[in-house]
Image (spheres, rainbow, N blue to C red):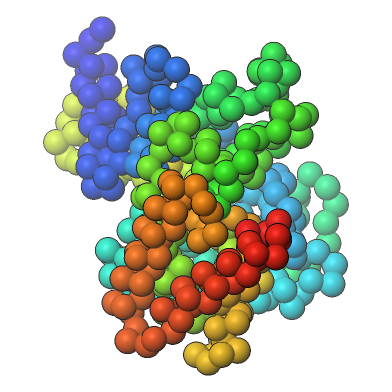
Length: 389
């Protein structure tokens, strides 16, 4: 191998590892792919502190493809970019508009708090709200859709990419039923299983049923599975608690139906320096890319979906909204009702972190009142035999 090729290889690797030093991420290169087992591999990857080489088949040409369905819109990704478009479902204009307004409200709130509070969590970047008369958007993009579509209302934001193929394959190896493992390659090749976001359910412990409904799109990872993979559940609880405190006391939204997921995004590489350009030439400069790198992804913790959120007043009616936002959501948050010792500890971690983060933002007594209301509601549900605990 020539010295120039070696230098190029070193330059590209150095760029990735340098990015990791700035972000606190760990680069998992080809040598780490030869891992001892899926559980160990997932433990390292899903720590939300790593980035990985992605399969080139995940990167595509520029066209819109469906990657999900929301309550108010169908979610289309523009391949080859980091953009996603939520196209309004019929009769859901008010809800889509609210999603747009609340998204921007939350984003601005996170931008105004200290890095220590918002560290380890990312919100998709707000783009713009598209109307049917927005010809500048629709005229060049209509041909990119695989089906006929008419100009409508839509909401543009940055995309949360699914987890890379090595991670998806390890999830199947570690957690899938036997019949799925028996047809692993066919299962992984399905388009819906490429858009793999992992929902972090710190409030659900039951074992996964061995059914044919196993899928990777919007994959629900339970607390028992996190413990099996030896993931840092205390870190997840702390990040969620700080995020909820910002939502409540900086954005003043009730956090109703928000989601916390593990996903990925392309890494951003910088242009080569003058010194680095000197070892290159016009024939090999293309090997060193800069800008968005879709072939290397950072894995991280994301907060999304604000269409059901609303702002509240700091009074008893507002407190009721916050309590409902906690209990009526999917079981992302630890539960104060569990009799499992690990769950009880996890609730304490969540509660303490929430109150500490809230105290940085507000001197109000409402954060403590919220925690008390959640605990009292939990006791009431447990005594009443509710399945929603």
